Figure 1: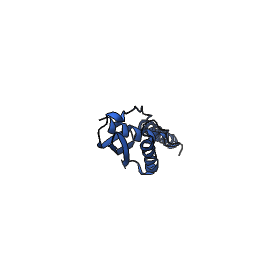
Figure 2: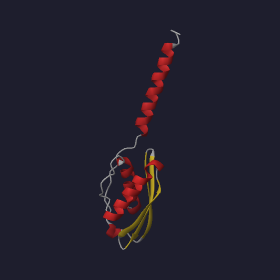
Figure 3: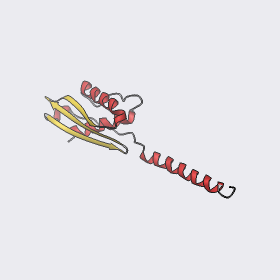
Figure 4: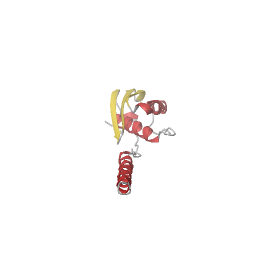
Length: 122
């Protein structure tokens, strides 16, 4: 047992270090959200996508008369879909990407906002 214990400790430490490294590498990053001039956006439906490491958002933004009429979150991580829809609703209400992030879901908020920006920036 005395000969096996150092090997077991080494294996356990290596596994822990590997998990920590993967968690750090896959952690989403804060994104820089720009602005969009709605006066330059033509009427229509636009699809926007943003991937922030393990977070992925796809949105459809409907614009009519230079106003956002609807934002549909087509795809997002299931455990944060309510927050994604809430941030999309805030953007639609404010007609701006300059909305407050949802407490506890800042990275989700950033990912959805960037997807909306990507949709309208095309």
